[in-house]
Length: 197
Image 1: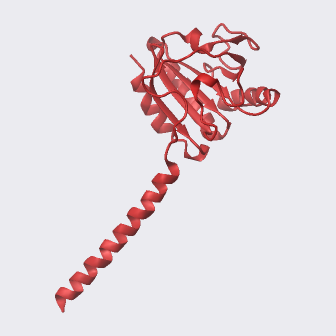
Image 2: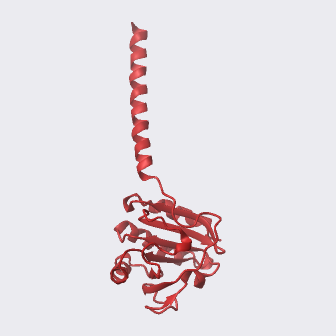
Image 3: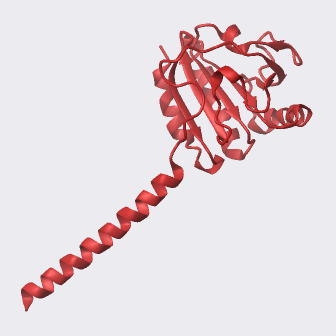
């Protein structure tokens, strides 16, 4: 009788553990990254943007059209494409801004591209976002191909946020999420070591 009780108890524990594993799997599937943007090993192509706000001391005037990717050259750089100006995105940009100051010797560069359907709306949104993120060193831009980013970057239309980490004009890491609530700022910041000298 004692053995049957132990066996029954063991079976209950196994079912609870299996149930938790299934729940954990569901969470993992829901927060999985999606493939978007250039992938590790790809070369970074040129693309043009209009600077809207931020990074007052980077030598680029507000309203200027340029290739920031080209301006940054082979320096380590983080390129953010976002369809959202959610506080989580602002938190990421704020942390990246601090990382620029902290890694001055590595000459880290960051720029944020706002994507959407209307260029005028994106320009207004970029100005507000520059203020809300409080970033001093990060330019906020609208790409010429503003609806889905540059064709040669393969930005997934379902991605809310796409992040490319590069140095020597080559991609060292990428990160993308379909829903901004799944943006893991800590994970993105952890990837910076892949591009810093």
